[in-house]
Every structure is written in C-alpha cells, then in structure tokens.
Image 1 (tube, rainbow over the protein chains, first blue to last red):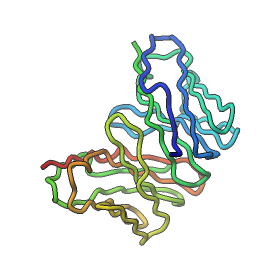
Image 2: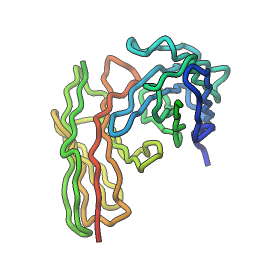
Image 3: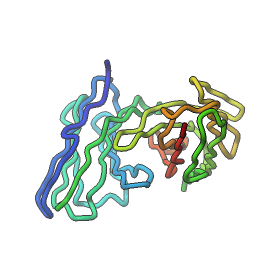
Length: 111
Length: 111
C-alpha cells in the first residue's frame, strides 16, 4: 500500500542534543510537510517543500531545520532540543492543492 | 488570517445516539475544507474534502456538509470504534497547499 512512513516512532533525546527525524513516502507526492502537535492542540505547520522549494513558516524557530534530498524522503533536524520541543512530529504529503496524507508521527521526549 | 473553530471540544455519546460536530471558519477565499480523524498517538487520517457551499460527502456513518461559514460532521448511530478526535482544516486560495487546523472535537462513544 502507498503510504507515509516515519522513523523512529518514539525518540528520546537529552536537552541540547541534536536529533533527526525521518519521513519517507511511496505516494510520489510533490509536496511534503512537517507539523508539530502538542497535546490537545491543532497541528502546527513548521515548513513544507513544494518539490525542492523550501517554505519556512514565519514563527518556526531557527532551531528547526529540514532537508529533502529527493522526492521520497524528508528530514527534520532539531539542532538543540529544549523541553518545550517535546511533542508529536507529523510528516504529511500531498499533490498541490489536494488533501494531505499523514504518517503515524514521531513522539519526541526531551529529558 | 485564516481561523478555524471547532465545537464542542468534547462530546460523549451512547452507541446509536446521533449527533453533529461543528467547524466554523474564516478565510479570504476557500479552496477546500478537510475533515480528518485522529486516534490517540497516531497521525490524522483523511476523511473528506468539501469545496463549495451545499456540497455533501458520506462515508459509512459519517456525513460532512458545507455552508459559506461552517461545516458539520454528522455522525449517525455511532459505534464505540468511532471514538476519536475529529479535526477540521481549511485551505485558503491564497496559500496554495497549506492547511489551517482547528483544535478538534474529542468524541467518545460508549456502550
């Protein structure tokens, strides 16, 4: 089945220790997104790629970076995680202007 | 700025007790309104897209409707497996593929 895959499902990191989350897709969608979702809150868009064009949200902290080496893969790098960065990180894909399909998420814990 | 407000925040129903969830929105121009289902600890699952006022979509016990200011998700004779958080999101004509989400309605269906 075509899908969006995220690894790892659970990630524990120490305060200030860099961490990378990965996302891959078999849908061949040209748009990929990274969201942050905290408990009982709406998903918050961090950035998205339209093909290789990177689009950063104005309020996304500089601590968050992303890479998209090819159509299928996208990475979220958190350079110096703080306690406030503990959240569920969701990757999604879509064709331009159509519904987004989400992966299962990565639960990040910062100790 | 696009805004999405969902009500109620939480809803508890008995099995078979039909009800409706509300999604009110403000956008400069609506490109699409999306409904998602999210189970605890998982990514959102796409349900419906609605594009214009008067449009309706159905899937099993769920029916989504759209007016110029709000959308309803009607749940007919719900079962315990319908328990989840239901998220509404809008896509603005001016922001290409980006979605603005509401905080969701947490639905619990009991026997």
